[in-house]
Amino acid sequence: MRKITPLILCLCCVTFYPRPAAALSFSAPKPKFGYRDASGKKQSLEIVDKYYPKKIVQPFGNDSKIDPKLRRAATIAEERARAHSLSKCWHYVKEALVAAGVVSSRPKTSLAKQAGQELVNNYGFKKLPVTDPYQAPVGAVLVYDAKRAAGHVEIRTESGFASDFRSKTPSRRPRLGILAKS
Image 1 (cartoon, rainbow, N blue to C red):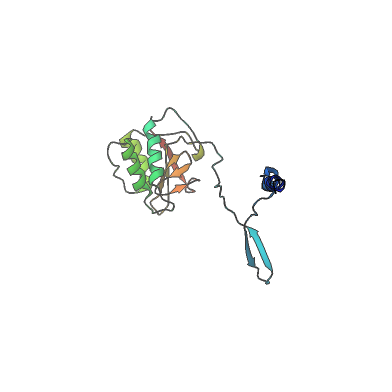
Image 2: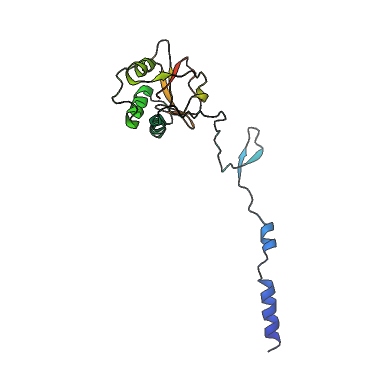
C-alpha cells in the first residue's frame, strides 16, 4: 500500500498541474446575433461591443491673445449643452458668457443674429479675421444669419461647437462673424 500512495500522488500532481500554454489556446467565442433574412435564410453577425465616435480631424485654434475667460465660457457652454437643439442658442451662450465673467451683464438682444453687433458695441468683442470656424480659437463666439429666422450663435469648444446643443460641426447658415475678446 505504501508504494501505491506516492505513485497516485505523483499522477494527481501531473494531472492537475496548471498548463498556461493550454489555457491560452482556448479563447471565448465572439458573441453573435442570429436572425432570419427576408428569404428565411439564417444569418448571424458579430455583436459590436465598443463604440468609437468620430473625432474632429481639423485642428482647433489656440490663440493666447484672447481672454482666458472665453475658454471657461466654452467649457461652461459645453457642460450645459444638450444633445439636441431647444431653439435657445443665444440664451445658452449668454448664460455661459455671464457665468464665466466675460460680460458684466446679460446681453439684451433677443435674436441670435443681433448678438455680434451687441457684443462688439457694448462688451468689447472684436471681429476676428478668421473665416474657417475650425480655425477659430477656443472660446470664440460664432454668429450666423438667417433670412426669416432668429439666426444662430455658438461657442467654439475643444471638441466642436456648443450653444443649447453640442455639435462636432459648425452651423451651415451664412456666417456673420467670428468674435472674441482680447
